[in-house]
Length: 29
Image 1: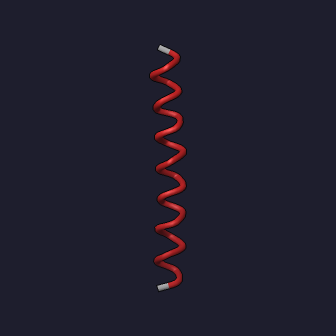
Image 2 (image 1 turned 180 degrees about the vertical axis):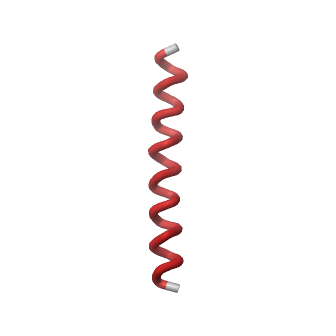
């Protein structure tokens, strides 16, 4: 169970970084 939670946490963290990069890219453009 812990492994699944860890995976979801890392995936969420990665998604947040991607969303942040996307927002910055949109702001620049």
